[in-house]
Amino acid sequence: MKETQVNIVTDIPGPKSKALLDRRFDVIANGVSYSTPIFVEEAKGAFIKDVDGNTFIDMASGIGVMNIGHGDEGVIDAVKGQLDKFTHTSFNVVMYESYVKVAEQLVKLTPGDFNKKVMFANSGAEAVENAIKISRKYTKKPMVVSLECAFHGRTYMAMTITSKVKPYKDGFAPYCSDTYKIPSPYYYRYEGNLSEGEFGLMCANKFETLLKGELNPDMVACLIVEPLQGEGGFIVPPKGYLKRLQEICNENNIVFVVDEIQAGFCRTGKFFCCENSCVTPDLITMSKSLAAGFPLSAVVGRAEMMDAAMSGGLGGTFSGNPVSLAAARVVIEKMVNDDYSGKALHIADIMMPRLFELKEKYSVIGDVRGQGAMIALELVKDKRTKEPNKDDVGKVLSYCLKKGVILISAGIFSNCIRFLPPLVIRDEQLGYVLDVLDEAFTSLK
Image (cartoon, rainbow, N blue to C red; front, side, top):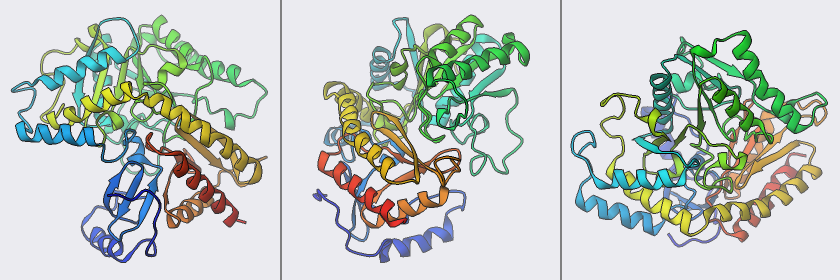
């Protein structure tokens, strides 16, 4: 693929994508969703080319997976080299060095100067499930606390501690037991007079109140939080919020788990998003951009916690697949050596001023928020009442797609537009996206 600019040559979707959609509906379960009615043929850098020859700028990155960009040559070469050697033995049966090497890389990169250990799995939800298992085993306590507006995955425990009922939890009850929620620091929807920092501390202290009034701390294994909530609407924690939560965990022998699955790997201007809040998690879950599209996730944490489970208590047949690990080694090296955190901050420098200009220009944009290259617009019907505006999100996304820009939505009310561009996106490509976005909002009038 050699395209370096948007090129739309058919209606969207084109005839080949339409034909594939018909086939999809015949054989793919309805519960498997899609946000764009196109089928990809090739992808490179920040571009996706569909089966009809249309070329789009990808502002979704496979939901924050392709931070390093599509088709990175170093990743592809590493994967091809591994394919020539072996593709699977199961690390639980016959071990391989790449599992150890990537674990060594992650131990060095994650916050904290204590001894750490690593386990690999296949998906973000699996990492979350295993972090909870580890926390329960280590503390010998059953309860799990998470945040409102959280998203942690679709497997049963991960789904239970996720907030959004439709579509993620609808009809799938009963959920897992012994789970509780505390308020998310969703400052945009706060109606009081506290400053953002004061509001954040008030929300964090609700955890302490919960432990005094509703739960016995001796029964709580872990608190799991996203350092910047993703699916919930890109909610950025106020200064001091995560630090206060960690203090409460430390005071009560509760494992502090940070879910870096979407916000990690340089996305927010730090290698791990929690570094923006100056916290040091006991356990970190990660996946998505770890292996540039190859299935891989990890739990990294304090050695004494990671070692709590007996041999055989963690893992799985495909966990830590050697092909995925080959990709991950290159991803981590490139992100460190080529300053991908700096690339994320540069993207923010370009996008945020323009987005704030759009907020002033269009009454439908209620809020602009984010860190680094993890940014969202929240749409409302009225800036005073802040009534969520889901319908216009759909209209904007549809307009942008027809102009060659792939965007996706987010938010507990499905009223946010989220931006997750590959960190290799170029300035002129971002400029095009922002111009199209301006046109899209104009079209709503």
